[in-house]
Length: 268
Image (cartoon, rainbow, N blue to C red; front, side, top):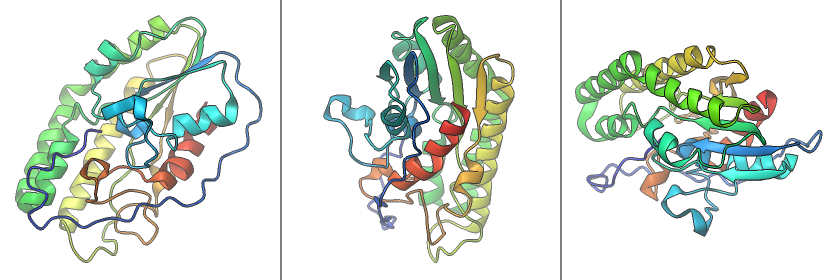
């Protein structure tokens, strides 16, 4: 998802989170993958929050510690096309990320939809403007998710199917950001945290429903993998408000390796 801009984050709101860069446990590769692998989507797939960004990816912040990069290292596909980009929407995927898909592409992964729903803007409001404003912002995001997101996802999934007719497509969703009540002493209210998690459930539900319409697609739910590792736990795999700002509310390196990677691997 797109990260909040730093327009007011210096106003006493920075609760700098620790970057968890412990040892990464790669699942052993059962076999080399025949065909090409294309990693599409937004910042949850590019690896924002995990560090080790490639210089060539610029503001897309593609990380060598992201689940797509780790998976291709373990499985050695014939080719690896890393298109996921921080801030990407469904329109960005359609316009900028599908050019290299073809009949030789046999595996595709994607996270998309959070930026369309304005999750970053809602999170910024929640952090800066209090519970009432947070609930209103989350309600606006949920309304978009439940009334407008489905056809945007369909456009992306249909285009992937057409451009990569032989591919197995794994669509991953988004984790709950917060443990409620959790052990956070400061920050947004538990009411706001509950609402944010509820919006994530709405988002994930719409994604799951649309994926079910497509043969050759798998829905990969990461919420269970992140259970016990949300913000406000002692072993968080997600950043709270942190520096650099664009890493806020994204998986850490451990979240990519121990959360997203095993879920993707189980569905690939």
